[in-house]
Length: 193
Image (tube, rainbow, N blue to C red; front, side, top):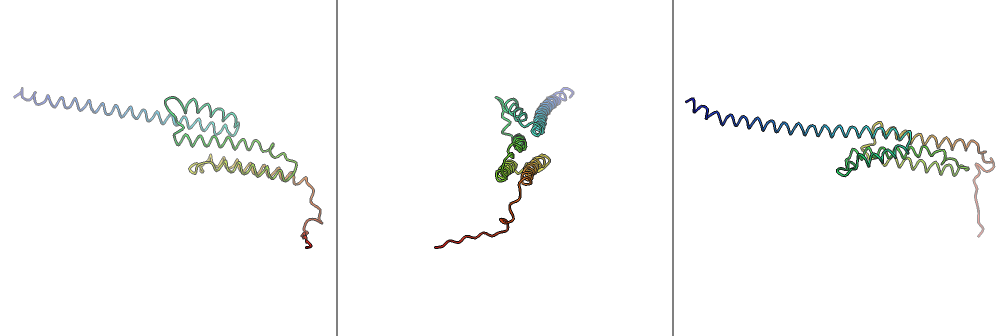
């Protein structure tokens, strides 16, 4: 009987060894997959940090932010083996940075564009700036129209509005009022037929 007991336990031993090996193999694959997923999340977080830095830099120096963004695109986002510009989150960050750059350029150009000699030309320049900055802001996708970054961009558009109005008010205070005999008079014309 002792001999028959050994023959009965051999298949059980092989089964236990095979089961243990399979279990180790499965857990080993799951662990490496988790490592890859964690690495991908860490890489995505590093990209998000870079985009945050570029977004903040766009408020200080739009040209430098755009230059660094273009370098980031060709060094980290688009390579021979991957294109991260197809990722929705990366495109959202890209849009935020580009719009921040454009709005800050508009804000920087307010004094030069508002240096007009006539009030009429100044209103034209003001409206062009307001239309440009407002339409730039609303190029943001709906999912990005909330949060701190959106409020910061919205505040920049409001700042452009206030600055342009300040220039208009300064020029209109320098211009003398129209003569009293012209204002308040309703002019009518008649034609003899």
